[in-house]
Image (cartoon, rainbow, N blue to C red; front, side, top):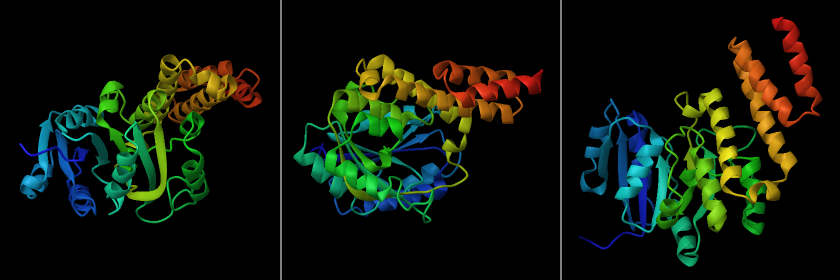
Length: 301
């Protein structure tokens, strides 16, 4: 067997044959070429197998029954031979500098658990900006380093823009296979709690927004975000002290409030009132949450 590559690129995919070829091509065109590429098919029913087969030995194909992207990513990492892992989504292309920039930095800083960078929106500006992390914030993160509150306040980590130590990935238990949407944030919290994490002020991938993005499921996203925060507090005994009890409570309360509005809109009134009650109990001095409780109480009485 040949010597291990410097990087193992893992793509977990499910019924993304229409996008997968562009993503694979973007990886094969990297300026940095010391990598292996592993595609894990999570039980696709489309032409995924045929798309990958066209690349021959340049791409390793692994298949599993449909069990979700987190399980597929963990399987891909188990097949990886490199010390550093690049986890890519099958519908987002990499820019040519991706592996060159991240692996170059990782080679100089082997103590890192993860190094990550920025991404741009594929079809132009979204959310009033061109990059996922705003330009000024990206520059600031690179200059002063990443703090826990940076990860907490906004989900800034996209694994498509990251390089992760395989050893550290395995030590923290890999992806939580019970999470469908918030796995990136959960993994970032666990890595940050145990290892140094660095940020580069570079754009290394393009994010494709489309109707098939699973993040469009608002309720699942909110429930998982709540669960990830609770996991952080449970596993990192310094987290609440570093972030501040009020900040944590406010973040959780806001997630419950948005969950309540989502459920109310769907006509699930009892579940909506329960979620709003959680928000109010976390922030008992919030006038907004109390007013919503009074208003919804009148409407449903």
